[in-house]
Image 1 (spheres, rainbow, N blue to C red):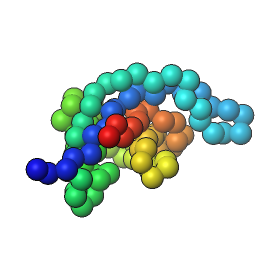
Image 2: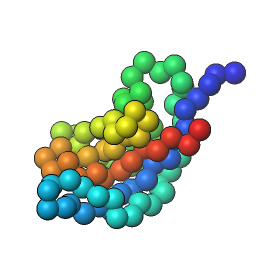
Image 3: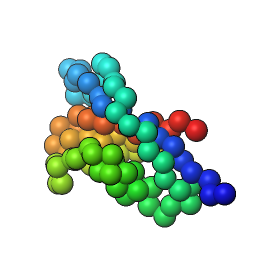
Length: 90
């Protein structure tokens, strides 16, 4: 049986501090996605699963950032505002 990585996709409501860093105010569960553990490009696989779940991001306006080795944030490319998060659940 193939081992899979499970992630919860959460929409993020964040505010920006005076220093410019973003702080999560609240987050809302949108979907749960699963990717093979041996996937070659995890970031690309997560974005693909996000689109398959019906969540669309504007190409060129967003970027996927690895925050701490496990958690990924979809951020606005210009402001770095976190829009979505991929949180591991296994």
